[in-house]
Amino acid sequence: MTATPMSRLPRTFFEKPLPFRALLIDIRRRVASSDGVGGRVIACATSATLGIALTVACFYPGYMSSDSVDQLGQARSGVFNDWHPPLMSFVWRFTDQIIPGPLGMLILNNVLFWSGIALICYRCLEESAAPAIAVLGLLPPVFGQLSTVWKDVAFGASMIFAFALLLHAQLTRSKAAWIFSFLPLFYALGVRHNSAPAVLVLMFYSGWVYARTFRGLGSWRTPFVVGALSFVLLLAGVSLLNRKLVGDRQGHPLQQILFHDLTAISLAEGKVLLPGWVHGNRSAPTLDELRRMYTADGLDPLLWGNPAINFETTGDPTALATLHQAWRAAVYQYSGAYVRHRFRVFKSILGFNHTCHAYQEGIEENSFKIQVRSSKINTTVMQALATLRNTLFFRPWIFVSAIIVMLIASLRLPPKARIPLLMLGISALLYEGAYLVIGPGCDFRLSWYTVLAALVMPLLMVGTPSFANPTTN
Image (cartoon, rainbow, N blue to C red; front, side, top):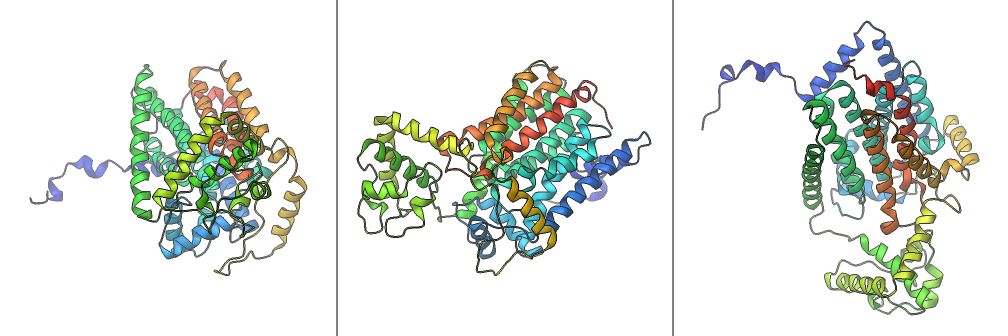
């Protein structure tokens, strides 16, 4: 088979811009417009750029918890496992080669977040768009998380950026923005183990934008079919990539959730229901040992902190089968104890009683000798966050409640304004609701996407006139 000479290719092959190039051309055209829109674009872009610069300056070179340090180790070794999302470690491997350490990922997360917020504010607000970007980005529950290279932050930033592109596509009929939104959605699907429900809802929104905006179809069948098929393709791509990256180095992280559930049920029923291999010496734990390790606030004490009694994870198929069998039997036989435990954990995650790990402080000790460079701005910001640590700013239940109220209120909005608001709110609630079953324990970062959705939804309600009168600007 011979290649087709370039001279014989149709002219439209060269004249039709690629989606990303088309998006850049679209942005340049808007900046050059003479109706005042160009100035607003520049103001929003400036506000977002200053937000990125301020975040990097405050938290340079980027905070890291023990999870982050472990992921950096995988990125540098090129040996990935599924205890943390391998896709994020894979991306980190590339940023680390360009900007060593956490700084590259810190910049990536912040570019995604600030760009998404800027585009949403630009589309929903008018003269107040630029200051609104700064206000939203600098709110304590938002800014405090932007400091750290976490999968939760990568997920939230990617989802907000993807939603912003879909919103832009709906309001401007931009096919380039619609196509480009698949990239952050793919990344979001790969960086959180419980991302699927949240991403699926945004894929339905993507299908709705495709059907209503580009095809002019009024039926609900097309949005669901397009959204579902797109989601399946993204999920298959992420699964194949993760399988390729991990190989036979599976860590089976789900077993830690099963440990937590079985420990709680054992204590409630007064008998040990865990398999004997959970201890290194192959002995079953005692009820007294389980009491010393169990807390609804988290499962970490089961695995770390007390080597003499802590559980050991396994990759042995036979042992894992035994664990799953014990869990299924316990949940079936003692469903009441299981449900009570799960609600205690979920209540802890939502912060009803207290705030847990509101934000990361600095960089955990690591073999890479990466440390936070002390600066006046860093000290000032951390002192300000410390004064707000135990306030309602860091209680996820507040934001969940706000989403529910806004979802009810949105029923009075016209469809073009109601659909994006519903999709974002439902996506966040499904993401948060998944923790009722698989929540590991109290940690504010787990709810960061929910927080972002709750803060973005009022912008969509204020911007209702923009939905009623789509524009090409």
